[in-house]
Length: 130
Image 1 (tube, rainbow, N blue to C red):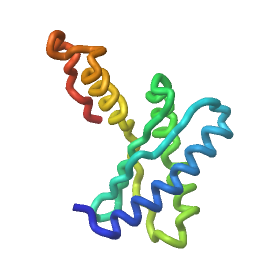
Image 2 (image 1 turned 45 degrees about the vertical axis):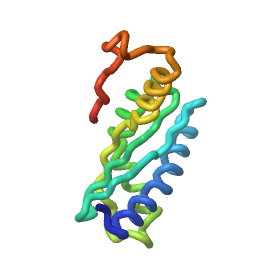
Image 3 (image 1 turned 90 degrees about the horizontal axis):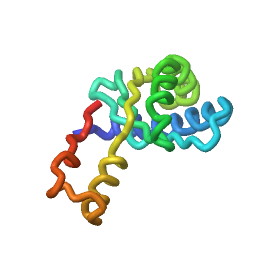
């Protein structure tokens, strides 16, 4: 169970991180790419923040995630500058792809009958954990 402090820090990080990533994407020349921060989890000791990103189109998600991970120190510095009056220390950032939308889309296709997992059990892939 998250404390109120953890939730507040996660919200502050999420709001500022969206702005940082969108600005970096537009200034980097990425057209038609949407990066959204779907969830931020902060550890109890407030030292780590797990950031879950949804990247559209999905085919570019892996390459963009690698770029974001390689630029984590710069992103963390930018966030710490923005939140210097709200947070004493900026948590370390870990970035992950949020695949929940793909998972939900697969369930919807199965329910609509486009893909029948009962007749073809290979369609019931396990959800990837990252």
